[in-house]
Each structure stands twice: as structure tokens, then as C-alpha cells.
Image (cartoon, rainbow, N blue to C red; front, side):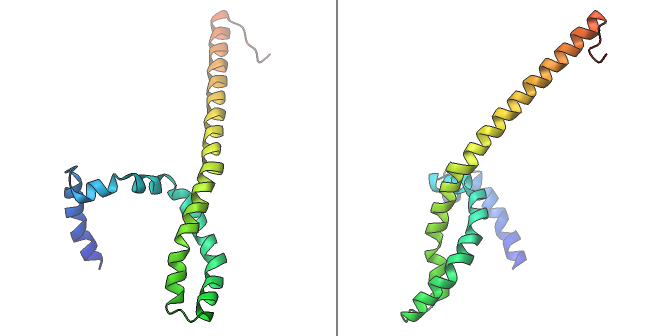
Length: 130
């Protein structure tokens, strides 16, 4: 199986060099881009959703005589996982990123100011450490 993946990887990479290829158009689609944007949230959320909801959903489907309950429950949980992941991205991850950028900017400005002050003190022969 690993050999097959390696062998098929080369044509995939070559097909991506042509922007008109099916694989390049698929990977540049807005849906795939959106999934990439929220991928970290999906990674964090999917296991929680599966562990909490899948046993109940499998039980419910089994009681109603539906075959392949585990498979269908897994498919059905994709939508809530994506919805919760999108919400976590919008309400937790993006605000956290903005806050961290703001804090980093403040620290960079403080470091620049401290560096400038130290350089000025050195030029004047004054030391603020005393």
C-alpha cells in the first residue's frame, strides 16, 4: 500500500504544476481552502464530537433497525463537527490570533523603545541601571 501511495504521489505533484488540471482546480476550490483554514479546529473538535455523540447515535440507529449504524453515525457527525469547528475558529481561534498579534506588536514596540533608550544612554554616557 505504501508503494502505491509513493507511486501515485509523483503524478499528483506533476498534475499540480498545471493550473488547469482537475487536481489543481479541486485543491484551489473555496471549499478545500475553507477546510484548510479551519483544519486546526477540526483536529481539536472531531474526536470530542465523535466520542460524545457516536455511541448514542449508533444506539439510536440500531434500535430503529438501520444497518451499518456505526458507518452512518460517523458520516452524520461530519456536519456537526464542521459546524462546531467553524464556530470555534470564528469565536476562539481568530480572536486569539488577533490578541496574540496585538500583544506581540506591543512587546516589539517596547523592546524597540528600550533598545533606543539604551542606545541613547550609551551615547550620553548615562546608565539607567544605577
